[in-house]
Length: 219
Image (cartoon, rainbow, N blue to C red):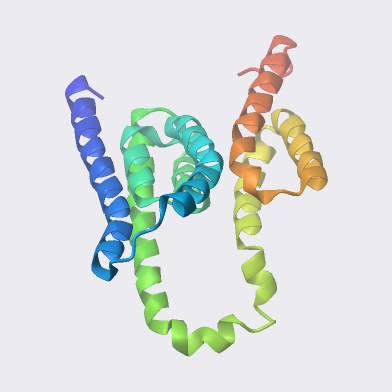
């Protein structure tokens, strides 16, 4: 991709990011302005910093981890629309794998952007339908028969996605996979999943490097 196209992607992407940030931040200000109820600093700041300590590192880690997978356009679009871990990243990776594309190539980046855009449109459509049908379907959604399914949507999604990569490179995947299973059996804290993502990436990189040096993998 030439520099002119990249510059345009970055320019438009930054505009959308700034616009999205302003919209997100404006919501509580609008509610407070309309109702006349403003949070007190001594009540707001402790809660804000408690949340920031958890989410800011995760946000930074997600940018560093997901950006190489999604490309320039996919990164901006994914972070503006949100829900990367659950929807956008799996959609982009599945689309790239279905077409047999090399990660980081221009074609892979374009496909990732299209996949994320499609995922966003489908998600918004489902949300709209869900809002319209939420009250009529509430008894069914709260039934005990469906509860196990809703409790395991994310594990099922990433289990299926992860199995594709484990099957491709079982030697590389073995160390981070075993480490993460043992770690979360001991720690049992779902809030640090995002923080542990780069740990798994680092373990995979170290494992791949060692196997390559020993001649057990070719690339």
